Length: 410
Image (spheres, rainbow, N blue to C red):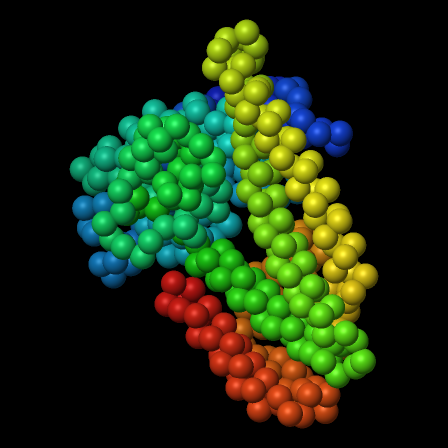
């Protein structure tokens, strides 16, 4: 096996311990060595596989979808099983997304943070730029980026639906010129860091599955909030509970949601600042003004995180005392309906859904199962509002079905 492996990759494979950042259980981060395996010459490997596919007669231009004068190379990466794996695929084959057409050229055992990606992938920055536009047998190469990872770019969910999208670098430079304040990042499409790979925006192909999962989870959470509001109707308007308590509860619930949004943003800022501060401390020393400023910003952000966590704990105690979240009959009925179609939330990743479960839920019979469960409960528990519940439930779940079945997911 080892002989065959050496014969397949030749000298174009290296492995070593490389310095990466790791989050500490007590907070903060440390810099330590971790395994890194990589193919030094990416271009050579791409050409080797092109030659191999050409000899086997596997190259195709997909009936004109790819221009006859172009070869498309798609870069992508993802973390799983404790390792981050960066790969490329030659799109000019019959099944471009097949595992048999996927070549991993860089793999490391560490968090897939921006700094760690930079450490591992910086070596390929020039190679990717050279690959873009080079020719193979008079055919031009076109490099595509499948951004399951951000690679230092903005989250694509924040981008407008327009073909006239400025480059990531343009927004990054504007963000820096404005002072680089994290709270203003959304004004610059979250381009807070320089992209590692300078791929033209029109050559970035976000995966349909990840778009669908994001939209589905957001819409489903909104529907879950609607079910919780129906539970509040039962708890506060159909019992002897003081109506003023309902008003106070609603206000506290709104505050809790706002605190959670602010905490998520603060933690993102804290992580980026800690990584950059540690990285700069290693490169130019802690006494450097730039490093000192990053350390100061990081410390202030950590204080904000702790303050928000304290507020969330206090607010959660108030909300739970009045009416526990996700404990009402409508929310429970929704959860049981999901289980009846064999869909379960992944508690270990924040209660979200995996791709297969999203596709299963989006089948029309299963959407109808969810609708029917909530509507039947409303008929027996809130008869005076059953018509409103039925209308809103049908509209909402049909909206989820239609939006998540858009052409980008075909």
